[in-house]
Length: 321
Ligand code: F6P
Image (cartoon, rainbow, N blue to C red; front, side, top):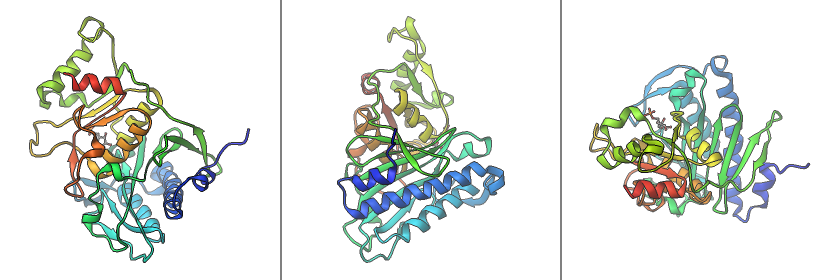
């Protein structure tokens, strides 16, 4: 059987050449990142970098290495007008006169998993730029404006999952370094018996979230009259990947510990690209069960949001509590 390679899929897309170039560069860099991740201690990739990022988080060595890899590759591409990263304070214009794409990324999602050899990933969002000399204001577009979103998950298999607005496709990295189409037309089942949330935060959640999760935990004997299972990989990429493969809901709600922060996850690097993929796979991606993440007007680059996404009927149930 002849399998479709990602480069052939990209070449056949009904999309501008510039977008095809961006996707090609990102896919090649993710394949390179997977080698560094897989090398672990042998790649000098474990442990802390000794630096603190704009989010006030301690950066891992791999956060810094992967951020540099993506930034360098994208800024060198003539199609790119500028990049923004969870790991960098400010947007980086590319100085490419013909560049008309903005690329936003979380170079290494779930970095607390690195040192324990658990899955991590890269998340990428692509927007059109109105100018070849973008400033932060040019990046402040709602997720609905994305022209592509993808993630790479570095787990037992390395996979790249992509949407350009016409469904979702999954490619597996072969031993020869090619991305091969293995998951055509990924669809999220509308119903589920599986949820993902960091339960240790239960006491900090708002009442409706506590009620919703409490009802799930009551199983067959409770108001939902069915048993639910729970999974939490602590890397959004891996948790969302599971939902794309077999359904489920992923929740990272607002909580009372830092009442002025709307949530933990970032709108531009995590919420928007994952929401685009989830909606394209037939699921729902919201802040609270109702408000679509893709319709949120960003106010600043590193903005955080609450996230509730996954199987459509279960997100409706979450909204209904
Ligand atoms: O980027 C933030 C992140 O690492 C996500 O990938 C993940 O879903 C979440 O944080 C894990 O949060 P916690 O530390 O509460 O388990």
